Image 1 (tube, rainbow, N blue to C red):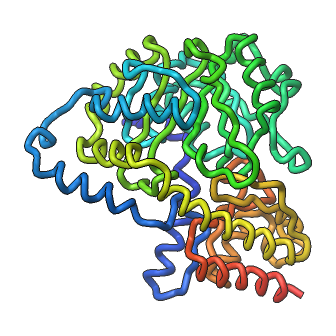
Image 2: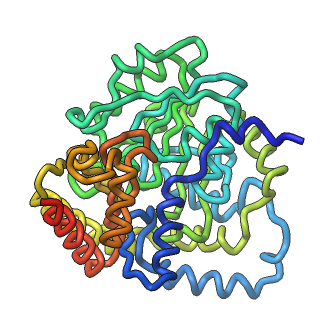
Image 3: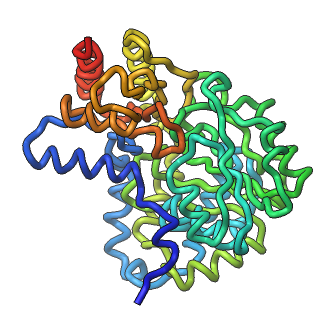
Length: 396
């Protein structure tokens, strides 16, 4: 008996692959420093833990709860979405999911028919094209360029749009590049989507992690009826709660009703204790987030300075999330390091020889680059980048 044809279409998470390889080396006693993790290195805020401990004693939290989420959490999402993001919505327009990744997959499954096309700017987060394929759609990659800070433009979208184009994936600040679109740049893209009646899936998990200038406005600020806009958000990044697995969808009632149907058969409700943790994080504000943000920015500036000292490594303007996306194509040509013909080879060489783990650009649809997360301790960041500098010097 054969398994699904999806087996030949989708690939496992590339970021998980590098993390697993690094983990195996650590288990062998190697001093690996990982730059691959897409999660803060800070603990979840203590007040969240206390609220969850108290909630665990309440038998009501031991039972099933509504598929769309606990009312207290949905109401808090409505409040903070207006306060932080300028999005005016209602609790019936919110569905709580098992993390942002689950929210994205459920959204694609709610919107896409077979062979519908989804425009995905490259470099992209690894899950976007795979989630589209799982949902029966076709990912259409919008290639971008280093010289443009990897930003898409309307001219590119016009060239790629067909009568099957249904969704544009939008993420600013960007994973993996750390790029943040300006208000004017974002508005041009939003207007294109609205005029062409294309859905915007706006991934806003990094909205609070912008270090220079302002975060991009949400398209939901302009599309108040949510006719074309679906917002994805969660507590993973800004509140250091990746393991709690709480995200959400904000969309019009038709999309939410469909998403509820899917989630009712897939997972039912999100863990009640995780939902209470998310409620606690939101209601207590951004003080802890801003403390993390200060550390991330210090590390960002340090990493930029260190990379700038390395010969033949180039950087774009990365002002958000907690990633840099250096151009290391010079070292991937096959003529500089024996046996290194790609950024995958280069990252494997760095991991095996110098025990530093970066995620190769191919994982994000962009050969000749790697993603460097600076969401790790100051000590590990300094030591890891020192090893990187030594690795380059050792080539000569």
